[in-house]
Image (cartoon, rainbow, N blue to C red; front, top):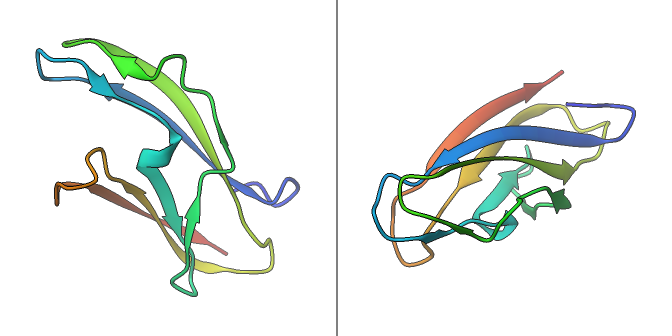
Length: 94
């Protein structure tokens, strides 16, 4: 959390464990704030939109947040819209 830029920054590394290429982009990442509102990424640095089988990429995703809103935030990664699989990480902002 960066209170001066009012953002939450997520540094990530994604590995495609399949043989087929997979889509990677900011739309797969969301942030749920303490008021249970889902926020889309404000900006991201994905170097590609398709990750080859077995390849790994690094990126940064930023979410704009209200610096006065403290509490539990949840970062969500949902790679496939119609699949229930997803990753969730909790971030506490004091």
